Image (cartoon, rainbow, N blue to C red; front, side):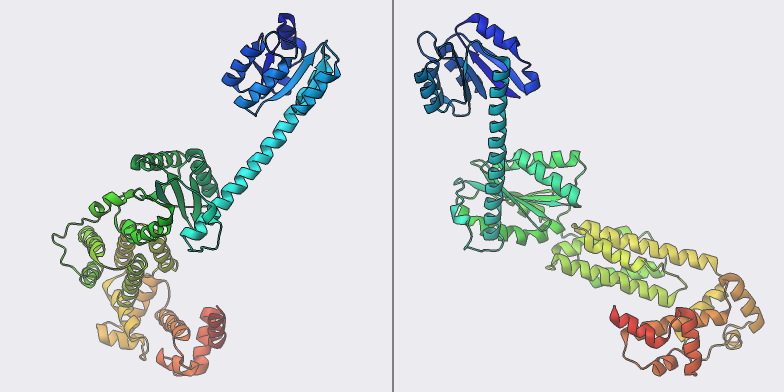
Length: 507
């Protein structure tokens, strides 16, 4: 609301103005009265009103003289002068001083309302323009500093951005980000930083340049931001705060050091607030019992999968995390190694057991590992995947008799041979008719249908991953007749082998 101050030496005028119009309807509030110009100056200094309504003729100082002195206190007030004298000199002086309105007593209600509306409308436009200009200047400052600090572009306007001699750079990383959280993130930053501070976003990372003479100032602001963001369920992965910087020319080098520290942020799971003073402490990882290599740990995990054992996994999880914390691998190198290991274990399980793996399981583990920003979370996804794989193997084996499991394993390994129920009966010591009935009862498909499924899956893999000709693939998966291979392939995929390969090449 607009703050109104009334200055008049006549009590009835002061009281009359209070009730003359509906101030609230005009979005105005009377914040005080003064009975002479000196008291008016004190209240202008105290309240900084938006509009001052003042009589011209008062004891000691005229209203015009009061306004001249008031402008040395604040230029934010607009003035409406009241006079019982329709004298040209007063009006001329009022115009010269930029007085918004000049009204004659007795005051007409409509004239006063029009004068107030005119001033409030002008003030709102000025305020809007000022806000737009401030926002523009802020964007320009942020853009110039970002181009200089991040991209090292010296041809920008950063030379015109003058910061305090003592600075701190804060980096903030969100655990999850979308358009809604991004907008709120920006609002939180604007709420907590000072006018002279600068903020910008680069990718999914947010940066604030604090003007500060004390290291504790940046630390305090960092924790305030975290608290506000958590209240709105925006989880932060980490904050990184630099030491005090003496000159703004040092900011690009400080930013580069922060990027180097990203590796440590990924490794140090229990360090949310990463200050440079505490960085060395965060990296003190106990080396007791850490004589593993990644390959030895992976080998132990494979043994656990083969033996369907869950118990060793927790110990192996700690060993793997300890190993990576002491390695020289970068974040993406670690993630790729973990993804490749999971996929290789999965392929081994498919080849050596009866497990049927859900189609999305491969994609999910890659997405989960590559999407996290902490080593411990990546390793959690690896062992959740391994645990799920063991459960799938156990479940499949529980559902099949020993002889059917043997048939499945043998078929996956020897699908290219001339396999028949009679041959399997000779290998496992059973009647071929008995094996056929038992297989269909437990697997819900005939053995011949299952053999075709295995062969066609292998043919699809070879069409995708090799340059073998189609007749060569047919022979390698166990079909002696090319026409028969085409027929079985089309029945399984609803397209010819040639069309299947073309579709893969398009993708």
